[in-house]
Image 1 (cartoon, rainbow, N blue to C red):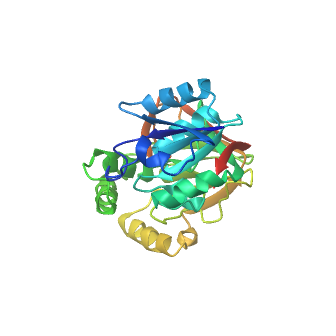
Image 2 (tube, rainbow, N blue to C red):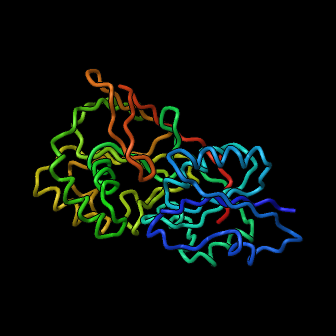
Length: 293
């Protein structure tokens, strides 16, 4: 018998999905599968539910939500034999899109039933993990303003981008150590990616791979208003690397630090986070997560 636990964020995306025990049981033969369904109801509850499912010897744990839900579930099962399934219910769904897991719930369930597993890399950020991307600067502010909106739609994301322009000069200098090189930068954005997609089919690191054992890093120094507009246009055509302010790297590890400030405002897999430290250590764990895709 295969034990599959579904951990559901009921407010992910539009919140209009109808995934429940009865719905899911229609896809899984009772003679072959044991189904458990759990709903998160408060902050960090997803992590608690996942740890509970691990103790209950689940073979597959399915994250039903956006990239934040996937992060919470996946962070608990790194390095185990437990398989991660995804039913993408969020607004961006960057990791699911990168893995070609469809937003259609029935099709996503059929993929889970195949149990075809790929081992993917995992990004580390101090004592946290990320699976798609993380960043300091403009993208973090976009996520902050997006989370403050009451509507998780593409238009809300566009409004969050516009609102974030007022924060472009609210970034302190950062010391960067990467590939034996050390330099200071006042960043418009420092973007570190494990996958090649943010969500909404947008990519800042189109060459990134979940299986190459490397982090793809894009560092953009401070931009004026004209350059921001130009950067945005070039990004649509994946030509933003043409700007002299944009530097790209591939690395297994890097360090970001500040000598005079013990706080980093970051986004981690599309969730806004305040990291209370003056140093961020980033690295890659190669092929440590079993994911069904």
